Amino acid sequence: MVLDLTMSMAILALLGALATIAGCLEDLESDVGSQSNPNSQVQLAPQMNFLHRIFNKAISGEPISNGLSAVTGGVITSVLLSAKFYPLTAIVIGSFIAAVIYGIFATTAFAGRVASQTRFKQPLYMDIMRYTTPSIIGHNFIVTFCLVAIAYIQYAILGYPFTIPFLALIWGISVGAIGSSVGDVHYGGEREFQNREFGCGLNTALSGRIVRRAESGLRNSIDNVWFCAKFGGPATGIGLGLTVFFSSWPTTIWGYTWTAIIVGFVIVAVMAILNRLVEIQVKNAYGPYKEEKTEKGVEA
Image (cartoon, rainbow, N blue to C red; front, side, top):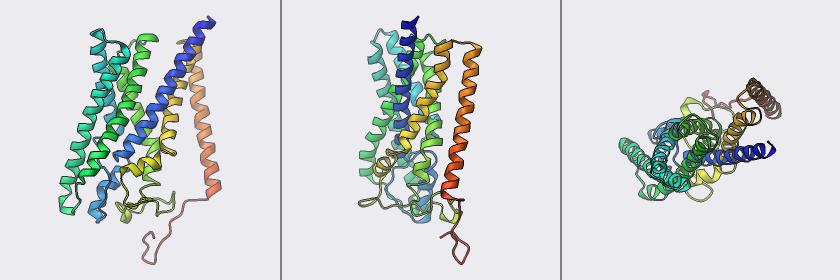
């Protein structure tokens, strides 16, 4: 009994570690490709006469694109497993093919968006596409590998009644949703508008007027990843890692019982209370949000 519990906790820790890595890398991948929340500002910038050197793909929202990538890797992995491939080999090959497909979508989306902005004189920088696309593929490969590995462990070891592709799809959607809600705040809210007071909101007249200068030279997507790797990426990783850990921990200890369900609800309630306390502390520390206005009533 003790050995079984120890092994279960070890597997649970492994799932949490894989989820943490997947969450962190997913957010950084969305930052290097300018996807999800900040994407609208980057897309709008040329129309406001703010030309830039930022990779702008936005294949779709993060949950859908990562769900597609994860389920693709899961399907290929399942096919290879049925062909008697070793699990690790199957997961690696499936994740690699899924990441390459993801990279193809990224480049066509980026080129298509720039082509549609020809009237606004936005150039298509080939060097940006050349060295940013491999970074997108690399990040997505690690994300897909971790998610498919989680799905395989849940299916083959923990005995979940769902298939590997389905489990990978669910986790792909989850990691995209967490990355979009947690990590992108530190890209769209801080990095793209560093000349604005944090938390003041964005006046409609300032939409698209992104900051285009980096610490050295013109800003590009790699600069954004460097910035987001400090906090946005790790915060997203912790978010998904805790989600996987706390959603699996009660059933690991008590099994599929009412006790596990009640403990799960208690965990959610405690997290909600802690989140509210942190929000109150931040507002008390930094004061209410405010807007600086010029004589014409437009935010300075």
